[in-house]
Amino acid sequence: MRHRLSRFSLRARLLLLTTSLLLAGLSLIGAVVSDHLERYQLDRIDNQLRSFTAIISRVSATGPPEAEDTAVHPELLDPALDLIGSPYLVYLDADGAVARSMRSSRLDSATLPPSGALRTIRTDGTAVDLPAADGSGRWRAVARPTVGWGGTVIAAAPLTEADATVARLRASSLITGAVLLVLLTAVGWLALDRGLRPLRRIEQTAAAIAGGDLTRRVPSLAPPSTEIGHLAVSLNTMLGQLDRAFADRAASESRMRVFVSDVSHELRTPLFVIKGSTDLYRMGALRQRADIDEAMHRIDREATRLTALTEDLLLLAQLDDAPEGQLDPAPMDLRTLANDARHDLRALDPSRPIDLTGPGGSGPPGPAPVHADEARLRQVVANLVGNAVAHTPPGTPVRVGVGTADGRAVLEVADEGPGMTAEQAGHVFDRFYRTDRSRSRSGGANAGLGLAIARSLARAHGGDVELETALGEGACFRLALPLLHHSRTG
Image (cartoon, rainbow, N blue to C red; front, side, top):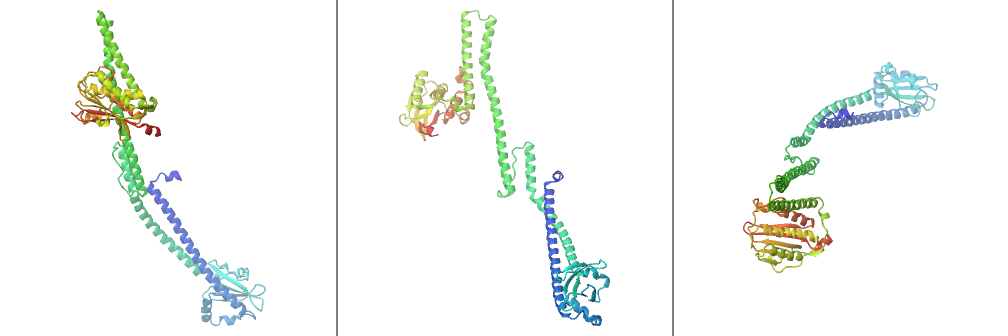
């Protein structure tokens, strides 16, 4: 049955269900009403027959009335019997034989109940149903014992009119129910068509999305408090998440393609140099000792570059996979790294003016306690220092700031160099990104991974590396980490 119903549409199934329930309800109501009407009419006839037999059983104390007394004036007897609701009255003697009977002149003797059935009636006033002798209908009869002569008086009334009334009620209920069922089915079909219209809109939206249009959304079809409204909101939320997931996947694939391309490009140059040098040696082109020493120097330099690049890539992969697993944190102060950064800058370019200040260049350097891996933070600061030296002219002033700001420990490396545009600043932390593509790449530090590694290490500590720059106004790289007490409570 369920398999057969599943072949119909949702609207057809809902309509079939509601029509079945409506039909069952109308049938139940019709049955209850007709049963109550029938019971009411039977109770009315029974009360009339009991009252009549109770009176007659006491009136006929000396025996049944004479026949001539009962049949002289039928025009008087018929209305009297109709008035008391018993058009058939029978007297039985002590042996159960019919002693006398009175009936309305309008009754045919063939339609009366048989005498054998009359003798089966209990004399305690209980009403019973008796069939007509010709089977044309049924009668309702009540019997009581007479007072004085030991007979029985029976009052009977035909149920033809009562049965006809119930039959008319049932016929009218059937016709009215059928008309009402048809009308309500038609109204239900239209109502379901209107009610399911939002679902068809949702179906169309889903089909469009399945066709590749991920920007489609379910329109606002109903108030959010309704089931359709809830469904539309849930679907739009799901579609938004799917759209973002597809966009993220596309962006990730694009980044991966760029990453693979950049890695290939970075690896190709040193490998070509190494391969070219070994080919020259194998062909015997390096005859002089100085030529061989120069070739070995190039091979060593490019091998060192490959090693540094491989280590940087491995570190980035480890930081992407499990950043906290690469750290060995302990309490420390960023002032130690700031002071070492100042010495490193002087060693790299003694001509540079270098200042050690507080955050933002105001005041003296202040304490900046953190719970961090000192070796990894030295790598971060070394990248920031190397970036300042590599991308500013010799002699450009550099400021190293350290202290606390906005509830964080801060270490800044700020230069007064050419600065960067907003577009360059937006990509400066991307892997293999260089603001100056023409710059010679001597060593792994120039492969465009330094700032990416610095930011990854800072975020592994729960902090970040921020950049403030503008074209012609220098650049300020700021390492911001949670303070020591914040790190411990976190």
